[in-house]
Length: 160
Image (cartoon, helix red, strand yellow):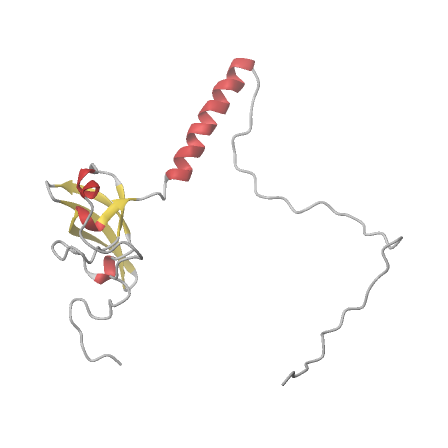
């Protein structure tokens, strides 16, 4: 059991920088625009200790509710007992990035809109719903020119 209960206790691997990602924060990090309502992922960057989120929020996804020149306010939902509490955390921009969790949905919306427009021009109806992967079709294995084989494990041998 650990005997230290500090603010960054047990974050040895959590806050470490990635391979070939050490050193100061890239300037492109500061040029990314964040707007209220954006969905962001929280990932602490150990090169900047100011405005670093608590270890609980590392890896969480939240919604931006406030934007300041060097930081953003993020709403994150935390499970406490049997309820969800809305936590408002102020985090510097080095520790967040735009989330890609909605990208697949937005691509699907765009593809559906295009398909709907094409179908409307032709005057036909089209099914835009997602269809689950169906089971594979049945097939018969013939034993003609394909004799059944008995497979056994190879006996263990030591070669010293």
